[in-house]
Length: 324
Ligand code: HEM
Ligand SMILES: *[C@@H]1O[C@H](CO)[C@@H](O)[C@H](O)[C@H]1NC(C)=O
Ligand SMILES: *[C@@H]1O[C@H](CO)[C@@H](O)[C@H](O)[C@H]1NC(C)=O
Image (cartoon, rainbow, N blue to C red; front, side, top):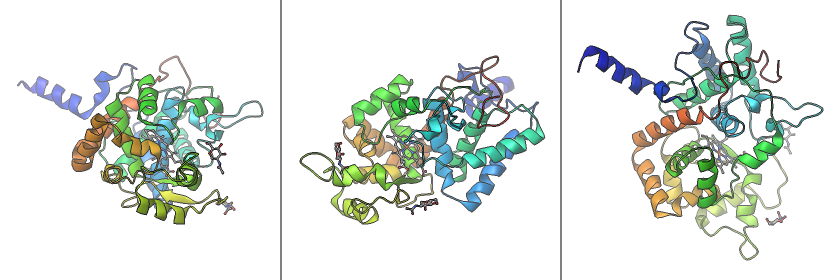
């Protein structure tokens, strides 16, 4: 193999940029703001030192941004008198945090290179850094997204999958966004990090159906533990449980091991075991952590390309919370 070909192959392996249909590319800020990715990483690192749980928020934030209207930082816009924004949908508020950290990164970036780095790219970088800092694979993020001007809470309600979804519903929802069923199984592995509010599982524990109070697909011992952590009828909105109790802050295969022993926290997690094809993928990810990490990194790059705004579309917001 000639040197040129070898270098090309290496470049392709390091960066999925050539597969980008959206005209994003790696190192987008190399000339215009060379410190951009480093500034985001340092800001994320500093935030995690204070509150390690935020590592999950940035990954979830990227998902919730990209699934709704594409990766356009619509998740960051504040509500106005006339408009309830995505971040105030019950699916995001109060569970999604870390907006102040994105603001801090943006403020540093505006100082360093005014009006250059989009809020949508900041989220994509922060999600990547969170994956890498918690033990996942470091992947290159094709950048060049621009920020949108619209954010509607109802679209978040209608688009983001609820934890009660079964396999068919999950597969359909992800297919609508261009993902295969296997990519859906892989992206669900993000639930190796973070917490859920008791309100997200109280029906599964106490009000599953007209005949059963508790979901029978949940390991009974685990159900008992969860009931202790989330008492029936509790109205404390701050009560949370770990999504992956064995290693809540490690990006590892542990989530899939949970699912295999019927300790997936949501019905949507446990649903991955409900067909032979997806169950096989769960096993593969459980036993081969490197495989899972690689598949996850690839799926995140793909997630980051959803309906992006580039070039003349969109804008570079000065403040991530308001349109220019
Ligand atoms: C497959 C369908 C999915 C469903 C039904 C779902 C649902 C949920 C729910 C209900 C929560 C808990 C919210 C709360 O009560 O605080 C949660 C948390 C989380 N989700 Fe998902 N999710 C899905 C896919 C994803 C994907 C694709 C990602 C990212 C790639 C993701 C990342 C996360 C993370 C990291 C958390 C923890 C957040 C924290 O600790 O604050 N989820 N998810
Ligand atoms: C139990 O579930 C049903 C059906 O989803 C719902 O209408 C009802 O409000 C729930 N009850 C409680 C106490 O949450
Ligand atoms: C929940 O947490 C918020 C913010 O930390 C706090 O202001 C509030 O008092 C808490 N609510 C309860 C019921 O503990």
